[in-house]
Length: 485
Image 1 (cartoon, rainbow, N blue to C red):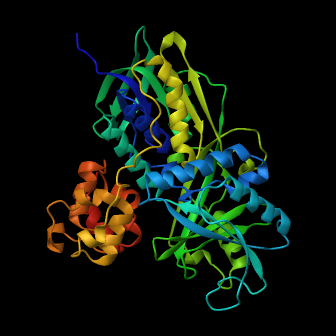
Image 2 (image 1 turned 60 degrees about the vertical axis):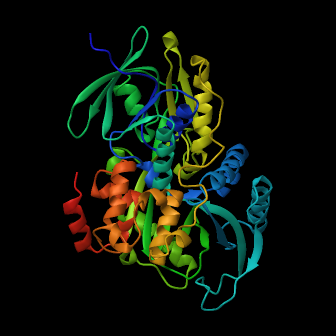
Image 3 (image 1 turned 180 degrees about the horizontal axis):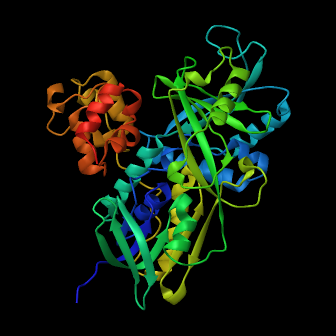
């Protein structure tokens, strides 16, 4: 009789929560397999506002525990991945027709009390000069600190952390069936490229599929859940750089929502997000004209130069799986998470509902803590220590003086100390191989395919590197003809 592979834990879903759980469990000595039906971070986890933040507006909903937990995690992630997580200063223009001045100041004071070592908030006065992009009617406002992150790369390096601790990471692998046996879960996987099926065994099964969590419960596990999710689409637009400087803006809308205006990849400005109830396939989510108009109009309300829909050069939409708390307004739904553990026949099933990018590490720690009683050999919580891959000390600009400065800086910010692996045996620019344009070389592509699970042009251009924003249409076509999948 054929012996099927057996793992302590099988994780379904290669978004931020799934890879974090896989990394935490593997680091405690458990054998782990993670399967993802497409690419890592191919949905919600690469369509965020690219922020590691406490959620200032959650204070307005009196969700102090979520803000406190998020701000604590912000400090941890700054320490774990300093190459990816960077402090940024936000400016909040004051408009007396929105929230009262005292109300915003009190909220920022509470935010400061819960925060770590980043610069505290301040009340500021705007100068009416060429460097100030805001309308002259806006005289004063506030500033406070949070952090930005490359969300898709955060997922990938967390998957690397899992793999470095022995986890198997299988992309393009879908879980099509799972049922409890007497001693093990019997899990059927299918390669989505070759359609080849495989049956494995697991002692515990974790459903971390984000917006697909209910689909997996109903159609793969044939089970029920006391929690339900509400799918909310959030869209962002990218436009040419709107203003000089490295600071961001938080703008208040008359409907009570806020949007972020954030410097993006040196040459652009990112604006978002919207909150729209969504039904249908999360992979099919796209921005619609009303969302573009909404975002452009709000920026135009505050900025001297009006923003037109024709200025938009790129956009993305992500479907957030929020725990349904029956809130009437999509923007008012709680951004927390629920971990459901079902322990029939001592074969645990765990379903993950909700969550946000900032709290992925602590969510994973709590999830694995709940599983550890079933695995006496499992170790203690550990993921807040050390560095994520690439986060330890590096000095790319000095160690590779032959690299063009802009390229060295991009490598340092994207890969950190992993750059040394990427540039192994390279001593001059020609060693990087074919140049596809805008600083994208064959050596980087080879590294991404060999070490970071990239398989297609989309994986490389839009998630691993973001170079799709810089390459011309002809350069993208040339690249895609070589790297298709």
